[in-house]
Length: 134
Image 1 (cartoon, helix red, strand yellow):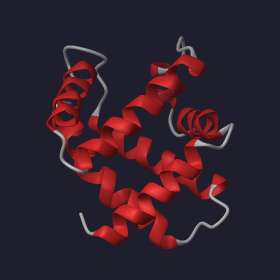
Image 2 (image 1 turned 180 degrees about the vertical axis):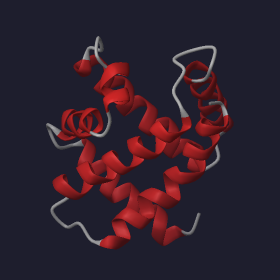
Image 3 (image 1 turned 60 degrees about the horizontal axis):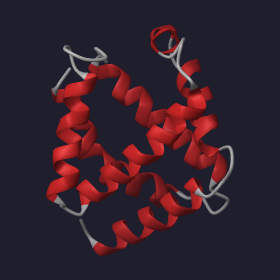
């Protein structure tokens, strides 16, 4: 990962996660994205899920800089969301990322296209790993 992308992503990541309402807004957007997503999240405690998402975003970020622990956690996430676990279909990961980036755009006051590119570069490869377990 090039230094500039990492810097833009990290600044945006920390900024958005510091904003109250960012993760709940993501979940609103995500649930609006498809009836299947709504059904998957129907009985979910969104506050608890937002806390889990925050932890997972840190794992994805750490996996981007190459820690073995984070890569192992990514594999664990993939398995737990795969056919033997939550049964998340591959297309939902694309919806997930698109909704996350819509929330970033809404909450990041200094948003510009390079921010979206940095998030996609950082998270895209890990989303592909998660999709591979579907």
